[in-house]
Length: 429
Image 1 (tube, rainbow, N blue to C red):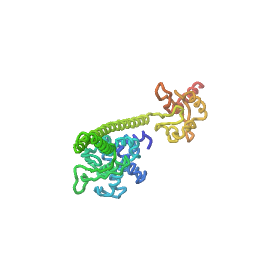
Image 2 (tube, rainbow, N blue to C red):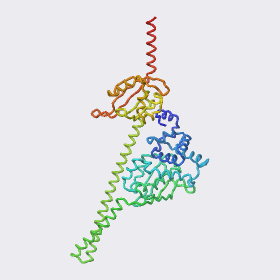
Image 3 (cartoon, rainbow, N blue to C red):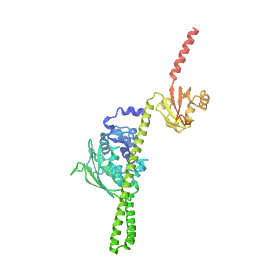
Image 4 (cartoon, rainbow, N blue to C red):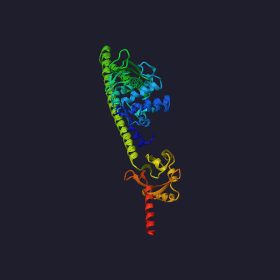
């Protein structure tokens, strides 16, 4: 569904509980894409209809959904795909789909440009450490806490901060944690799950995940460099001290000197990595915030353009391309806007043959300001348009884009013609 105005009309009828600000669509979109890939676009859209949310809404990364959406979607999938009339416990194979969806959420396809930004954190351990801050920006239902972390391992706890937890959330979290090392080309992590909210025999108040992973980031490299440097310092110190003290005293002095040098070098690398990580995390947060602002601005622009009672458009300075057409295009011209976006010449072809040369002359003269002309719709109907065109850009730079408003003035022209005809008849009488 591309008609933003129509989409807004539909959303007025959506249950508010389905579109509460609980979970960002940037979390839910990978799951929606995984459904479409596994079961087909048609089945995915059909299930969304059963839940009660338009597909266009789920394809918009600026939107949020409520806990009720997730609950209904789980029930619909259990019924439509697995033929179940009730939700099984977490040991049932159907829940593995959500684990796969969690793994997919860290793929390049799902993350887009954010995939490159996340890799800047440098290592899986740094990403595991920053999971609570990452999650807070996109999930207001679940609280995450890093209980323990170190080289090659992490322990992470999660529990519902408001509402309740679903088995699908638990499986998605596990899949996500497994996929973290794959951002850097490492094998998936091994995730043990000793405590689970959804354990049918011994439920816990939290989900606890013990993560074991492989990495070789900057800190492990620093450890290797430290050992090499310590060996070099020990050798040099031994040679120098051996000329002053006895061999045993020289060996002890070299060992202490090497240890202190190694400790200093390793700690310098450690704190440098911590500082770099904080700067990168802040940069990712700024990037994420700016990305969200751009998406929000685009959504607001489309909503405003969709509610203007005229055709609004954006194009290149020479109309060599059209970048945006508001929902009023198709009712006015009689064909889909996608056709014009692919072939900009179709606008000129729609202009009435008797007005075409005058309009071309107006465009060659700059094409700004106001003009009036007729168009012929595909069925042969003729409509009168008044078009106003404005430059878009910075004052001291060449115009790179133009914007326009097209108003259908057919009824106004016909009213004027009827009035002129009546006046003419009165004069002749």
